[in-house]
Length: 211
Image (cartoon, rainbow, N blue to C red):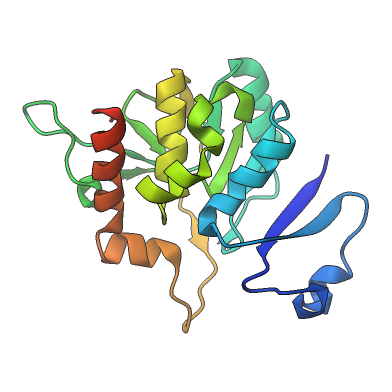
């Protein structure tokens, strides 16, 4: 097993810019990688999918508190479920009477075990997947940045839907974010400025009514 932290050289031009508290933790199992350019949250899956396409990958964010057994339980469920994607938080895609989806802001958060065609997983809450099982556009980063520049979770859900993968949500309860008073988070931008809805419409215009 290897833990890789992907950092953009736009924020960390060289190793001297990385906090010592992180550098001193590097060993055979924990590695920090500096990459050119900044593909924002898409760093989470893109580089590891390119380098380890056939490996099991567990995606997490750096601003959430996770249960200590989240990886163990996710792996156990994956082994029971074959090629499913295992996630630890998500949303129920709500629909109007005509069957069309409601706006992203109207979707209901989910916190307990769910298997449903209407499940939309949040990638950073702890998501276990095999990159090679997702749709072949997964690492088409130019297309991903064109359609979903700020929403890797929308892109990953599209790739899962197009590949016909089942998605399973584990029981975890409420997500506990790490709060920073002076920080503007990606989720606050996407949700507060309705960017998620814009990006959903972009992928639907390109791929059709996936959701």
